[in-house]
Image 1 (cartoon, rainbow, N blue to C red):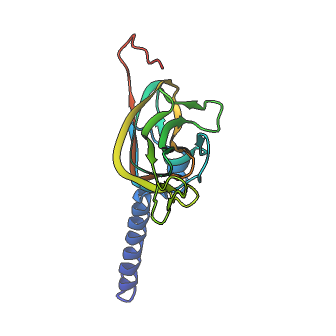
Image 2: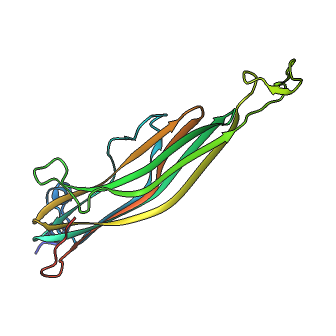
Image 3: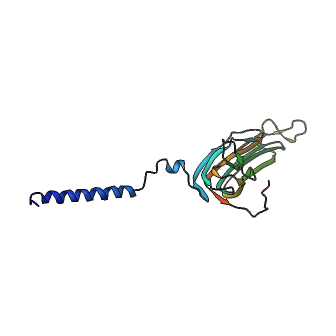
Length: 251
């Protein structure tokens, strides 16, 4: 073999080996996940979500009669069941309640104010589909306070005393008396949790949503009343289970 062709032969062999190695390596590289996980959600036994919700930090205003806000989605999760199973779902949240009642009374006339604040929670499965259902047991009260304040005062009589010219006695001018007031404010925050259930779920992809709403009621006469609600941190978990044979979940 000619000496001048030997280096060319070595270089060609090296290039060929490199090409073969490259092709083999590309065959073992992981494929792109775009669309793979989204369109083919793998089956799972559980799903969960947690975080700082910070919703419903508001009030519906000073109202007469009970008023409930619309349901709001606060947490959600998706999972795929490989066969017909039961779902056990747990929702836990910090619930803050604020109530204020003020009464204003004079001349021995009673005055009352009341404030009701509460948060209701429910779990909705497959919302917006033909399989939509509310998880058992339905709406659950996570926090509620009914505050009522009543007082009977004579009123502030400074400068309202007069002398009766006929009898010489001391009398009170009722048009001058100023009302006395009493104000009570309560503000609490605590964590609550509840377990929901959906029996006999079919195989497939299911979406679970935790929803919450405010329930407020205020009433007053001469004073004032106010009620507010707050949801702080929260978490939800959904687990695929199989109940004991013959066991039935009912409302």
